[in-house]
Structure formats: C-alpha cells, structure tokens
Amino acid sequence: MLTVTPAACERLTRKLANKNAGDDKAMRITRKPGGWKLSVDCQQPADTVVMHEGRAVLLLDEAASQAMTNATLDVKATQAGPRLKLR
Image (cartoon, rainbow, N blue to C red):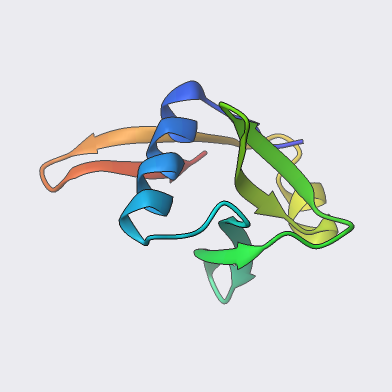
C-alpha cells in the first residue's frame, strides 16, 4: 500500500479545507497520461482510505492502490510553497 507521511496528511487536510470540501469528501489519486492526478471526490465502497485525525483525506481505487504499493506520498518544499511529492 502507498505510504503517506504525516506531513502529507497535513497537506491533504489543508487542500481539502482550501477547497471547502465537506466531511464526506477526500482527495483522490487517479492515473492520467504520464502520471497521476489529485482531485476531490467521494469515497467508493472498494476504495483504500487514508485517515488523518478521524477524517478521510486520501482515496485510492484498487488499481491506484496496487500501482502504488512501494510508493510514498510526502511533502517537498519549493519556492512556491509546500507541494505533495510522490516517490
């Protein structure tokens, strides 16, 4: 399963707050040509769910969860501010 660092969980929580996402929504990682996409979505029954402080912050469908078995989601400092980084 994808490893999500505490810093990444905090960043996802802030992204959800900035998007005014309700408690029933979380960020979802989906495949796009050449990489991955992060968007707000609702939880589906077969999703892998990453929780942070009692709230779902990240959703992965079965394909994304399997593809990210050895990956880590972390935060990288950039000149434009903190950014999520998949490695």
